[in-house]
Image 1 (spheres, one colour):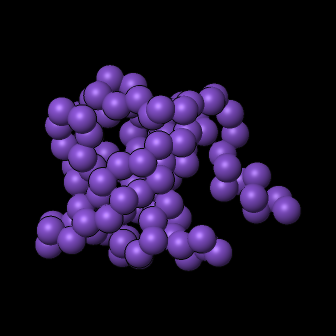
Image 2 (tube, helix red, strand yellow; image 1 turned 90 degrees about the vertical axis):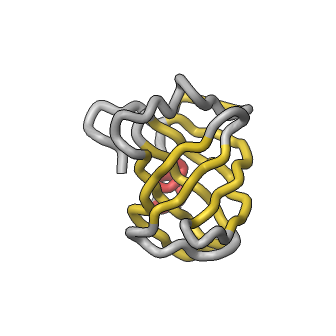
Length: 109
Protein backbone atom coordinates (compact mmCIF):
# COMPACT_ATOMS: atom_id res chain seq x y z
CA UNK A 1 0.00 0.00 0.00
CA UNK A 2 1.17 3.55 -0.58
CA UNK A 3 3.09 5.17 2.22
CA UNK A 4 1.51 8.21 3.82
CA UNK A 5 2.04 11.17 1.53
CA UNK A 6 2.58 9.04 -1.60
CA UNK A 7 0.45 10.55 -4.32
CA UNK A 8 -1.37 7.90 -6.34
CA UNK A 9 -1.74 8.21 -10.09
CA UNK A 10 -4.12 6.41 -12.40
CA UNK A 11 -2.09 4.83 -15.17
CA UNK A 12 -2.22 2.53 -18.15
CA UNK A 13 0.76 0.56 -19.35
CA UNK A 14 1.94 -3.04 -19.66
CA UNK A 15 5.02 -4.51 -17.93
CA UNK A 16 6.55 -7.97 -17.86
CA UNK A 17 6.46 -9.38 -14.32
CA UNK A 18 8.48 -12.43 -13.29
CA UNK A 19 8.65 -14.42 -10.08
CA UNK A 20 11.87 -15.77 -8.58
CA UNK A 21 10.97 -19.17 -10.07
CA UNK A 22 11.31 -17.56 -13.51
CA UNK A 23 7.59 -17.79 -14.26
CA UNK A 24 6.48 -14.60 -15.97
CA UNK A 25 3.40 -12.84 -17.23
CA UNK A 26 2.33 -9.46 -18.48
CA UNK A 27 0.68 -7.05 -16.07
CA UNK A 28 -1.36 -3.93 -16.69
CA UNK A 29 -0.27 -1.01 -14.49
CA UNK A 30 -3.56 0.50 -13.25
CA UNK A 31 -2.19 2.77 -10.52
CA UNK A 32 1.27 3.85 -9.52
CA UNK A 33 2.93 5.71 -6.66
CA UNK A 34 6.48 6.34 -5.51
CA UNK A 35 6.73 3.12 -3.48
CA UNK A 36 4.55 0.71 -5.47
CA UNK A 37 1.73 0.00 -7.87
CA UNK A 38 -1.57 -1.74 -8.47
CA UNK A 39 -1.32 -4.29 -11.27
CA UNK A 40 -3.91 -6.35 -13.15
CA UNK A 41 -2.69 -9.86 -13.98
CA UNK A 42 -4.19 -12.98 -15.55
CA UNK A 43 -2.70 -15.31 -12.94
CA UNK A 44 -2.53 -14.92 -9.17
CA UNK A 45 0.74 -13.97 -7.48
CA UNK A 46 0.65 -14.82 -3.79
CA UNK A 47 1.18 -12.14 -1.14
CA UNK A 48 4.75 -12.14 0.11
CA UNK A 49 6.23 -13.31 -3.22
CA UNK A 50 9.23 -11.43 -4.55
CA UNK A 51 8.86 -10.33 -8.16
CA UNK A 52 10.84 -8.43 -10.78
CA UNK A 53 9.41 -5.81 -13.09
CA UNK A 54 11.13 -5.50 -16.46
CA UNK A 55 11.61 -1.87 -17.44
CA UNK A 56 13.21 -0.64 -20.66
CA UNK A 57 16.77 -0.56 -19.37
CA UNK A 58 16.61 -2.24 -15.94
CA UNK A 59 14.70 -4.52 -13.62
CA UNK A 60 13.01 -3.40 -10.40
CA UNK A 61 12.48 -5.77 -7.46
CA UNK A 62 9.22 -5.70 -5.52
CA UNK A 63 7.14 -7.70 -3.06
CA UNK A 64 3.47 -8.57 -3.48
CA UNK A 65 1.41 -7.00 -0.69
CA UNK A 66 -1.95 -8.41 -1.74
CA UNK A 67 -3.65 -10.31 -4.55
CA UNK A 68 -7.42 -10.30 -5.00
CA UNK A 69 -9.44 -11.89 -7.77
CA UNK A 70 -11.78 -9.62 -9.73
CA UNK A 71 -13.95 -10.23 -12.84
CA UNK A 72 -10.95 -9.62 -15.16
CA UNK A 73 -8.19 -11.54 -13.40
CA UNK A 74 -6.27 -10.47 -10.31
CA UNK A 75 -5.55 -7.11 -8.69
CA UNK A 76 -2.01 -7.27 -7.34
CA UNK A 77 -0.68 -4.54 -5.03
CA UNK A 78 3.11 -4.36 -4.88
CA UNK A 79 5.77 -2.47 -2.91
CA UNK A 80 9.08 -1.81 -4.61
CA UNK A 81 12.26 -2.41 -2.64
CA UNK A 82 13.06 0.57 -0.45
CA UNK A 83 15.75 2.79 -1.87
CA UNK A 84 14.79 1.92 -5.45
CA UNK A 85 14.22 4.92 -7.68
CA UNK A 86 11.05 3.54 -9.22
CA UNK A 87 8.51 6.19 -10.14
CA UNK A 88 8.91 8.64 -11.76
CA UNK A 89 12.71 8.30 -11.88
CA UNK A 90 13.20 4.90 -13.56
CA UNK A 91 9.71 4.35 -14.94
CA UNK A 92 6.80 6.47 -16.04
CA UNK A 93 3.75 4.73 -17.55
CA UNK A 94 2.62 5.57 -21.07
CA UNK A 95 -0.62 7.08 -19.72
CA UNK A 96 -0.70 8.85 -16.37
CA UNK A 97 -3.35 10.91 -14.56
CA UNK A 98 -3.23 12.26 -11.01
CA UNK A 99 -6.32 11.18 -9.16
CA UNK A 100 -8.14 8.92 -6.80
CA UNK A 101 -7.66 5.21 -6.64
CA UNK A 102 -9.44 3.17 -9.31
CA UNK A 103 -9.95 0.49 -6.65
CA UNK A 104 -11.75 2.85 -4.27
CA UNK A 105 -13.99 4.17 -7.07
CA UNK A 106 -15.00 0.63 -8.11
CA UNK A 107 -15.75 -0.28 -4.46
CA UNK A 108 -18.26 2.56 -4.31
CA UNK A 109 -20.42 1.06 -7.08
